[in-house]
Length: 237
Image 1: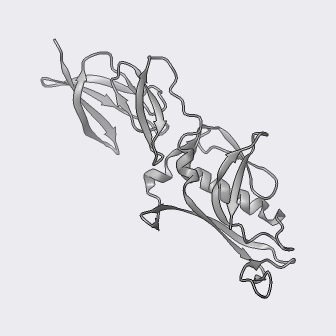
Image 2: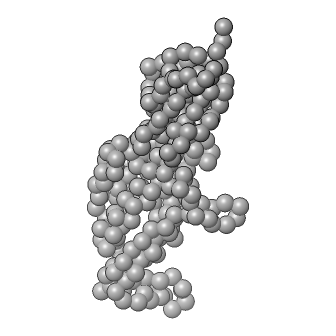
Image 3: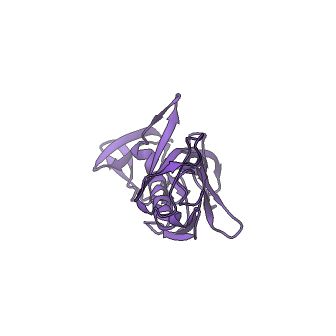
């Protein structure tokens, strides 16, 4: 006889119901990378309840009580998605998760110099740094271009896993800069944005454009892995 379980998720300190359509069996759950999630059953009156308690490292969505480990992928928005199942024990691995989403974001580098910029030429409005100007401050801002306009990223978008790497070498217009994943496992959108800003603060002064530091190529066009294993930051104007 089929016994139906009421699946609950422990999130933000409270239990919230997810679904009622799981047949009784061994208590299992997997995150979007196919890794086991802490889960157990108990009985509440006449109802069998499956509890799922994700930790900080688990990647959503979480699949409760599957017969197989899910295959993970990324949809057009960069969100994790459950596709066709894989046999239990087979890894569900997306090495560069949500990279398409990250590289599609609109990013701008703001560079403050110790001296004012000047026109490249009398008939051009393009600005260049003087030969003696140094970088005083630098920041990097990411936005989503949506419906013809820019908007801020949501918390969930900032928390999306982009690269499942414990360490990352980034290169802009200067020497590569090594970054460790904050959790030692992967980089989220927020982590990568921070790493890009740190890379540019450390090395943008090494760039040259019309005799001074490059303040012209400041629009983010994605990161791409090179043959030497370094991830190149692409900047446009």
